[in-house]
Amino acid sequence: MKNQTLKSLTEAHAWIGIIISTVLFIVFIAGSLSLFRDNITGWERASLAAQSNEPLSAISYDKAITSIAQQYDVDTHHGFFMREPTPHNPFIEVYFATHLDEPHPITGEDHQDQHLLLSPQTGEVLADADRFEFASFLYELHYDLGLGRAGLYFVGIITLFFFVAVLSGIIIHWRKIAKNFFQYRAEGKKDKWLDAHNLIGTMGLPFHIMYAFTGLVFNLIIIYQISYAVLLYGGNQTALLQAAGFNEPNIEALEQSRPMRGIDQLRVKALDTLGDVSLTTVEITHFGDKNAVVSFTAKSNDAFSNYKEVQYTLNDQSQIYLTENNYDNAVRAGLSTIASLHFGDFAGYGMRLAFLSLGLATAYLIVTGNLMWIDKRAKQKKQSAKSLLFVKRLTSGGFIGVLLAIAIGFAMTTFLSTSHIDKLETVKFSMFSAFIFALISSQFAKHVLSFSKVLLGLSGICYCLSAVMNAASFVSQYNTLPTQTRVDFAIVTALMCLMALICWKAVSRINAAAQTSVPVSQDQQPQQTMS
Image 1 (tube, one colour):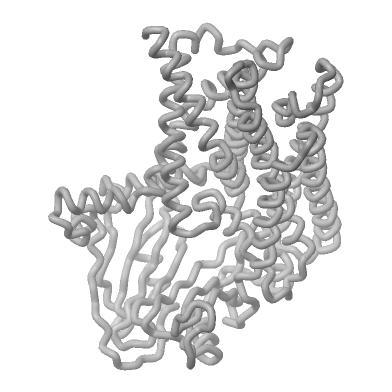
Image 2: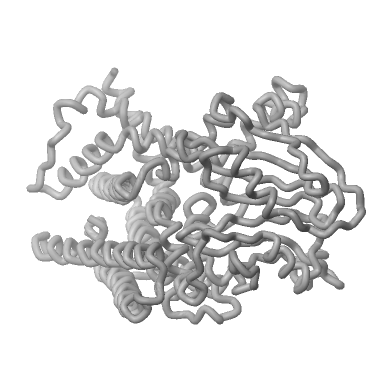
């Protein structure tokens, strides 16, 4: 490759990295922690688990539905979903909508969504599940930044640029990958950043390619569907889905009411039909109607990433649909395999720890990329001092702001009472406020180095306080907690300690860099703030 071409490619690689860096940092930090979202869910709902602490051997969906029908005016024109209880979440989790006599004052909708946790044995409504959704929100930050559909597509575009950055990095370093694979020059900060960047990029290459590709599929799949439907099926997306194996029957409602009983019998029937599986969700289409259809979705216990589904009419309990050989369908099996690779749920905790390490290492790779860009630009005579200072401050405020926001999230989830009505909204507001505060205040910081230390210190203190509080709560509740909830408590507390350690290590590196560097004004060397 010609030197000029390589130089242009390197410049493009650097600019792509600096543009997408903050969003990509959020995606990888939140995604790394979300690998343990089931554990975070179990930890967050520990108080409820301690109160109920019932075996999962006898689950009654019929009692749960009866309890809901007695207390809520269910809107039959909306979906009705139930999640199967698990050791992490030993409750029937229900999603449905209720009628409103008047339009909602904020949304204008004629219905209100409900999300409840029920006892799997008695069907008793235990709590509003939205008060225990920090794990879900943390995961939302990973794939849509908490901004809904617009954020989903935005992250998809960022992932596309990340994919381009990965490919360009391979081309740039292809000739020296083998030669400099283990090279790490500790004597100079620039060499350390470059060597760490290259080493993490090379060793994590399969991981980065996998996440870039699978992230593209998840975030931009609707665009692929529309393109294929227009080009190959004349705009008929239904025909495309049927050709891909998503050929579920469509049964219309009769508008004749019928009690929703018999779900437990169908559950036994579904387990017998699907074989060695773990049920995940139960969906009732046309809830309350004589033509109601009950769908059971399950994950196979003996096949990699194989999801199966069976559907019955509730009135006569006849089977109307079965993904009998789902794994052999290239599209459905491919999507399931991609999902398992992305979530790291195809193996045990060892694989998740490996993915956690690679995810955090990738976050450090992003940091080193920014630091090298700043250092290179600082040496160029034509570089605008104001624009460079803006990027320096943005690097500190943006990256550390993510750590601070998540620390605030863990702290608020720990300290707020479970009876707090708007607990999740309070947690969300606190996290967004902390991140925006870090971004804005960084642009007014006269001493970026000191500013970074303060933000890191605040983040570390929040993680430490949360860890200490959870450790004390764990000890006090130990005898009342189910076995899996104890494991969840320990894992989440360990995650808090790990994040606190990262903050403390970053502060110690800043102090070490400040002591060994040549005495100049701190605004001239803020690139050291994240090393």
